[in-house]
Image (cartoon, rainbow over all chains, first blue to last red; front, top):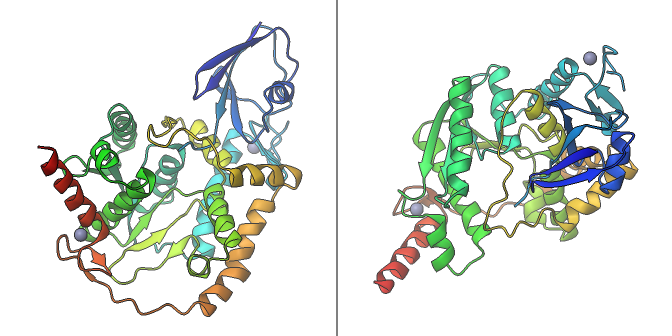
Length: 65
Length: 305
Ligand SMILES: [Zn+2]
Ligand SMILES: [Zn+2]
């Protein structure tokens, strides 16, 4: 299970299988410049592979309000 | 993906620059965008004494960090709006950031000024965001003048600037189009205003803050209704995705070719600016807008008693 946490809302979603960051972004209907994608405190580019037990943070960069 | 410069593993990819960078090369790229923007548009002099408006978000904190890194004399200014929960969080993020980096910080408390936002929201019958913006601009300028700062810097980014320019263009608002840009020179008792991050997008600032380990707050203002982005920002997101670099070209094209034309066309009317009879801040009326809000609020509170 890949665990994905969406910030700043704090919503958590899981995926059974993901291959790459790009695939994750597509599933979330996000463009890569909308968010930071973070794993273990490091930033991931769209082509990075996602492993089956990864915990990933997807942080929106748009200023709200 | 590999870093365009050194071929190490990239962590940030930027379609608008047709590039990807490792952390070290991204830092160089970012700092160069800030310093070249300042140099090309003549935003700051080496000896400027700069007051940096800090909201606690990624843009303002990155701005403070970058200006200090470039060797400028910077002091932070935070306006504590007195909104329960929200204001304390923003303020502590800023206080921690400034003490960690040894930055000077001035905090202006709206509670003490007799303008806490919860009461303003309750009693002043005008859109809270516009009143709040007015109050913030008033105190930025007031503090800048009282402490002899020569420049006031804000963290407005390319996305903010493009959204505003686009809205002004849709209305062909000559007055706004004539003085929009990253530099407003000092005049009529107002300090010089600069936006040194005008070449950097929200995405680029967020990456910088992350890589520099700058904790920022990303909570929406509880009064804004949490609308995440406007229709215009959405349009630009799609345009930029289809042809990367459009945002930058639109904005810089305006600065080079549009702004001078509007500035020449729009002869500024000689509005006389005098010190406010209450607080001494420059105003075209006898009593400035913020002092008027203050007295309206006091009247409402008196009536309530
Ligand atoms: Zn590199
Ligand atoms: Zn006044």
